[in-house]
Image (tube, rainbow, N blue to C red; front, side, top):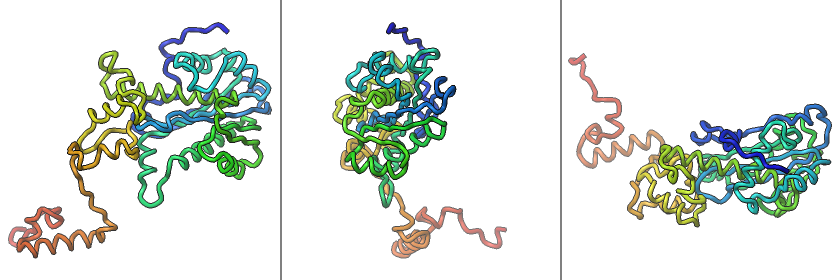
Length: 332
C-alpha cells in the first residue's frame, strides 16, 4: 500500500491532551466510532489491549485498546498494513501506522477504532506511595484495562472477543476479567502483542502516544530550546538503566521538590537520589497529625519545650505565635 507522508499536524496524535499531560493528570482518549460500525452497530468485533512505558522512571504509562470487525482483523491489520509488536517496528513505521489510523478516508480510519489512557507519572507515584495499602502498578493497570473495555462497550461496540498482553500470571488476570465481563470471550497471554493483530495495533497506539507525550513534556521543560534540547533524547529512553536518563535526573533535581509531574517518585532510582545522605537535597521533616497526637500533641509539645527552656511559647515562633500576639484590655 502506498505511504502518504505524515503532515506536521499528524505528527501529534489526538491522544495527546497537552494541558492534562503537562498538569500530571491521568486522562483517556477515545477515537470516534468508525463509519463501518455506525452503519451497522451489530458487527461482531475483536478488541486488543496492550501498554507502553511500564518500566521507565520518566513519563506516563499508556494503555491502548484497538477494536476491529472480527472478519477484517487478519487481512486488514496483518496482510495490508503489517502491524506487529510495536517493539519490533521502527519509530517511523509506528508513526506512519498511527497517522494512517487517524487520517480520514483511510481503510483503517473507516473500519477500526481505538482508545488510550495516559496514566501520569504523578498518579502512578501517589498510588504506589499511598499510606496504608499501596495502589501498586499491577492494580492500576488492571483498573485501567477494565475501564477501557467498559468505555468501548458503552459506546455501543459489539465486542465479542478480547485479547490482552498479560501483566502477571495470565490465568489469574483472565479469571478476574471474566468475572467482570462474563459475556465476553477473553484471552490473556504472554507475548499477545506478537500473536494477535488487534493487540499489535493496540501496542502501536500506546507506544506512539507515549513517545509523543515524552517529546511534549521534554519540550516544555527545555522551554522550546535548541533542536537537540527539544528532543526527548536529551533524557534518553526514560528507563532507570539509561545513563542519559539518570544523568538528566541528577542535573535537573530541585533540592527541595525533586522533579515535576514527569517523574515517578516511587521508583528506586528517584528515591535513592532524594535520600538526605546524598548531600544533594534538603532534609525536610513533616508533621504527622495522627502519629504526633493531633493538634493537642503539637501544642502540648510546644508547651513542654517552652517550659523546659524557660521561655514563652511565642518566642519559639511555634504554634503560640501563629495567630499573632495577645492584646491587653488597655490596648483595645
